[in-house]
Amino acid sequence: MIKLIAIDLDGTLLNNEKKITDRTKDALKKAKNQGVKIVLCTGRPLLGMVQYLDELNLREDEDYGITYNGGLVQRTKTGEVISEITMSKKDIESLYELSQTLEVPMNFIDLERVYSPAPPNGKPSLYGEIMKALPFVTSDIRSLPEDIKINKALFCIDQPILDAAINKIPCSFFENYTMMKSRPVLLEIMNKNVDKGKGLQALGQHLGIKQEEMMTFGDEENDLAMIEYAGWGVAMGNAIDKVKDAAQFITLTNEENGVAYAVEKFVINK
Image (cartoon, rainbow, N blue to C red):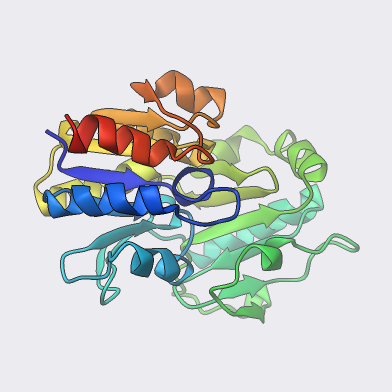
């Protein structure tokens, strides 16, 4: 029996116009009314998905969200932290040095703001075109507080430049951090113990819900861990091959109400 449904946003819950269709809203409302937990699971901060939480009525006392790709689990109504895994100033210094070597811009984020250290000449970050929920502040890595907690770092630049840079990242960084693309132009970098699967595990432990009682929906590399973790991982029809290969079911695309189709089939009309 499915007790929790975790859903990625871009390319999954949202269509290509960044909207939730009426059919999808109706299916998730019915599932919630049956007692199923509906959890949005994203790389965004909580403030970056408030609009969608409100549309789905997911800001009540016992509603939760998984943000920063699993690094943060929160109550959506109050922002109360259930689980949090962060990076240190030392991590950010190391990653910034890497970004300068690769000649790609880096941003990093805490709960309140996006930090923008000096980019390589002529290669500004594109992240401002994606992140609208948090303010951006110019920062000097050396002046950061020693006890700062960073939720994630990222490289955001045109896809050909980013892909070429990723191919040059030393293996040690992949061993020491979780690195994954969430969009063609965006590489996200987090604590090694962060991924959406681990965030889902932390929430499941808090709620007393087992992994075999979970259904997850995703389309991109950063969704792979939760697709593999859940008892019923669902890949969107527009998902990358890695996600489809790991899933128990491949639904329709995000343009064809893929989330609604699977929820209707396996949860509402089972």
